[in-house]
Length: 47
Image (cartoon, rainbow, N blue to C red; front, top):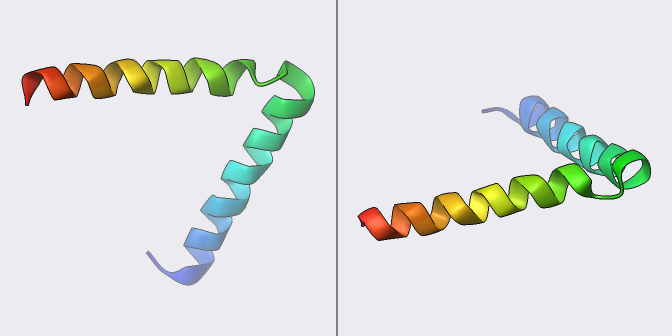
């Protein structure tokens, strides 16, 4: 991955987080973090 692509992806992630904060009151981010937490616990079980 080169620098322009990584900067673009970083800006896209920040923009999506800002949109989630302003329009959905962190609903999408909290949902994804809860699902990620469940996935991490499931992966730890199989380790």
